[in-house]
Length: 314
Image (cartoon, rainbow, N blue to C red; front, top):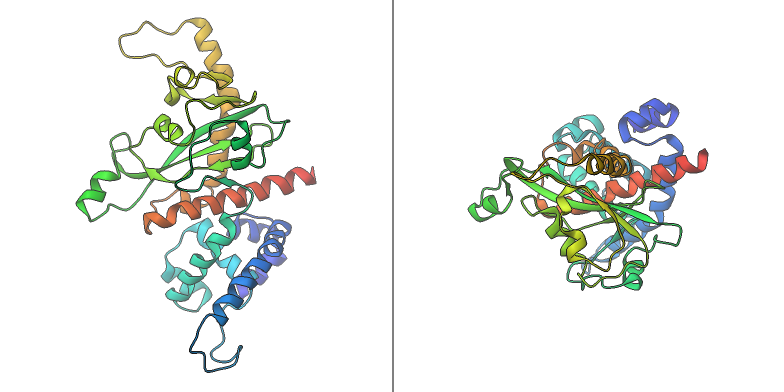
């Protein structure tokens, strides 16, 4: 593959096409290869009516883990159409979509915690550590926030109303993340919901009001008003004070506290910024909504890999 060979020789080409440095790309290949080979082997042997021996038949256009991972990262970084991938790499549109579909779950299961659908809400620190295995005694604060992204306008009337966001004046989906402000790593990614759902409501669907956090403070923006009242057992550091319509202006002390909180909360915005360098999370999402959350988690995992390796290098 010409583009891959060129990127492996020049760092700036690799960063431009995948968002990763050469050593980061090679590390991701090594981590992914065993799972990729296992899935490929299972897919090969799953056919009950196989007539040829294993290895027979038409050869794959992109037969290595390195090639398929490069195609996925190129797609996520630039977000071209499948036809454009066909023009650049060869093969056909179906081949490229299968590669993207198969690589996404391999990357989305790494380096982040995911609350499985249907799980009971978190009630105590033990359950919190079970869901967030990266939480340890050194973590004193966590940042929580949500981000919206536009999707294509659904044709179905019910889904059209469901995903219509009055705030954004568009059809959107929303995903919540929890970030460690010290390491800048993304600890948790929520399930993706319709964009019109309020940030605080999404938080309440994850955490039980009787939860106890064991001393870890939570930092949140003005979208989480009432957090202290509804979660009295949480050790809350600060929530941005919001001035409501008709209320008196914020005092000098409140404005000062908001500025101090913003200096820490900016790290969750930086996390969103790092993820959205991958244009699949920045442009209008063109594919089925149910495929959005695995892609979001895959990009979060890649972002954490970059942070870990660059922290080790310094």
